[in-house]
Amino acid sequence: MNLEQARFFMVEQQIRPWDVLDPKILDLLMDLPRHLFVEECNEALAYADIELPLAHGQSMMSPKVEARLLQALDIDSQDNVLEIGTGSGYLTALMASLGQHVTTVELYPDLQAIVKNRLTSFKNIEFKEGDGSLDWPDEQMYDVIVLTGSVDAVPQTYKEKLNLGGRLAVVVGQAPAMSAQLITRISESEWETEFLFETDLTPLVNAHAKPKFTF
Image (cartoon, rainbow, N blue to C red; front, side, top):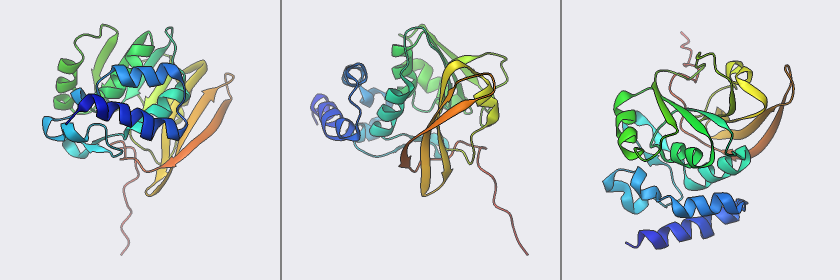
């Protein structure tokens, strides 16, 4: 399979038609080989319009969702980024290519160990292990925060961790109807929410309410 051609088709046939038109994002997607972030058995599917499975029941977002969120976040070279859910490390690498520093949090140590090996060339990524489903209490403020799994409701804790003008990307709701949202802090006590698109994303572990049993 010609992976270079598959990457070109991903950008031109999936991502551009989904209104991702920022040249900076399109160039980055062409420059960073996505197939290096999937298991070898899934290499042929790396550029397909699907979520790809990871260990522990997790998944890698589809390319167009990653691209659309990345465009909406508008990360620049001065931005300090927090990612909840390292996953495959592909989105981590994209954001590290754009921003000043990325702190990425992963619940599963074995997943993060794989990603660390993939991202040795990046010197601006800090890896943390733990459960960031509802909060990551590091007492730091960020310009960009991304939750890479869906949640029932937007955690207020992450809104509070945004600097003024900071952006939070999050997918909210219950399957099969979820909405991707961009939340921007516009004052100490106000946030502006932009609804980006409808989607269905694998839940962030421990972020969704457990079902209640009735007798």
